[in-house]
Amino acid sequence: MGKRLTLFIIAGMILGLIVGAVLHSMYPAKDPQLLAIADYLKLLPDVFLRLIKMIIAPLVLATIVTGIAGMGDTAALGRIGGRALAWFVTASVLSLSLGLVLVNLFRPGVGLALQQGADVGELAVKDFTFRHFVLEIFPTSALDAMATNNILQILVFSLFAGIALTAIGARGAPLVRAADALAELMLRITDYVMRFAPFAVFGALASVIATKGLGIVVTYGVLVSEFYFGLALLWTLLLGIGALFLGRRIFTLIRYIREPALITFSTASSEAGLPKLFEQLDRFGVPRRISGFVLPLGYSFNLDGSMMYMSFATIFVAQAYGIHLSLQQQVLMLLTLMISSKGIAGVPRASLVVIAATLTQFGLPVEGIGLLLGIDVFLDMGRSATNIVGNSVATSVITKWEGLLGEPIGADADLLSKPEDGDAYAAGRGVH
Image (cartoon, rainbow, N blue to C red; front, side, top):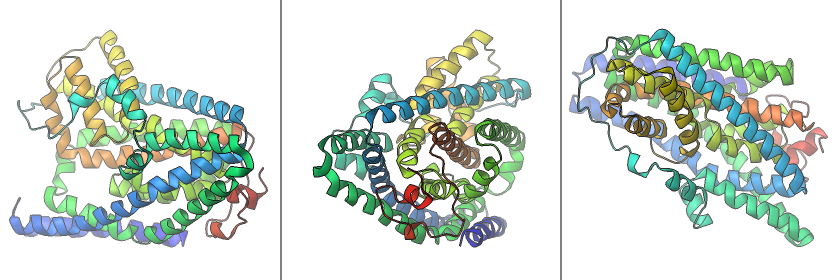
């Protein structure tokens, strides 16, 4: 099904662009009938994203609990966590620095005239403080964390649950088996939900193009093209660094993650590709006890595409208003973004929230976000797909460091038919 699904997703993208462009040409801008049609088209990706969110919380909980219990060694957990965080910090510096260098080299904001007082929407900047971030890490209720799909809070609860199950030994074995079965169930449901992905991709693109038109990409083509050039460089760097550890298997990894990357790109949602990414990394040879811990951690601390976008966009706004920032100010801004970006998980329109907060902190005009809002969906597609690539490479490299990277399973093989022995996928490959 793998190759067919990829082709169907690409077909959905092309058809969505065509239908959206036709609808945009048939109706005047902001015509009520056009908006109604676009709203119905948007129903397809909205339903798909709800189905994805339905899967994420139980899948993350089950994989982390099973993974930690399967390790049976808190020292190994600490080592993997330390390596993951070291990689995430390095990737953060790389992403932010690359964005900073490129925006100063291309200077896309120079010569633009942004209107004062543009509506920046409901960006919850007032809640974006260090105190708020720290409190948001720890759940007041495990059920509430799962109900709101707060990955960071689910991660914290799952860590406690997994370590506690390891401590109580045989008495916790039934719960470990139940968590393993739950993970299998969620991945089977993921397989069903992914069959709807091409329709969601079609609806998402058709809705956006119908209301905004292809012209918006042309109008801001310089900014969009320069940002995507930066993302291409970042992909090259991340995959190149990954190749230093994985060798020629980096090409296998690229082939395996193309579907979650396409789904994420088309829906402009990092969450959309997460369940499928779990499945593909399992096929690539990453034991569930590694991916189940590192991937959720990465989705809270390793959003490479989002971080590059934030440094790029912040300096772009300063350029657009003709405000000169010294190298010292830009480096300080980079460090601020590096710290503040670690708290964006679960915040609505997270990257824009961080940008608005940073602009406010450095006395820059926050209304400059008004320009970004018009094309944010197109920029979000690229940065979300980059987040998938960054976390895939990080998880694979850390698995290699641990000496646990198994042989890849065929792209069309049925993972769920593998032995269910604590770590089903690892057992299926003879990885212990």
